[in-house]
Every structure is written in C-alpha cells, then in structure tokens.
Length: 66
Image 1 (cartoon, rainbow, N blue to C red):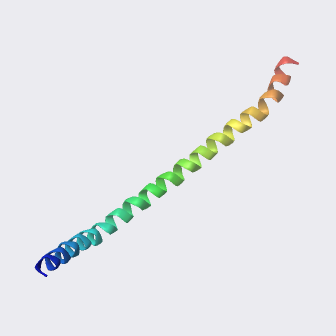
Image 2: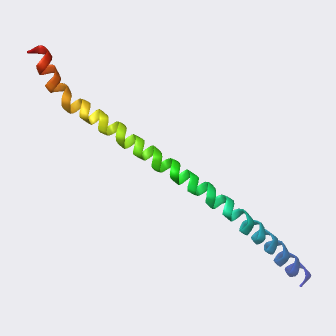
C-alpha cells in the first residue's frame, strides 16, 4: 500500500509539472506556426515571381532578337 501511495504522489507531481509547462509550450507552438505561415507566404511570392519571369522571357527574347 505504501508503494502505491508513493507512486501516486510521484505521478501527481509529474502531472503538476506538465500542467505548469503547458502554457509556455503552447506559446512556443503559436510562434512556430506564425513563422511557418510567414515562410509559406514568402515561398509563394518567390515561386510566383519565378513563374512570371519564365512566362515573360520568350516575349522579351522576341523583342530583343527581332
């Protein structure tokens, strides 16, 4: 019985530690999600710019070489 009581006390302490750490972990997760959204947006702009350059390049070559 004494061992079970000690184990329950230990698990309760671990649960308390996790509950106290959770708000900090959630804040870090939100920061990472914001960074990932920002990177995805920038990558979209970069690929869009490359696509425009590739689409316009033949037109510019025709103007220069004609």
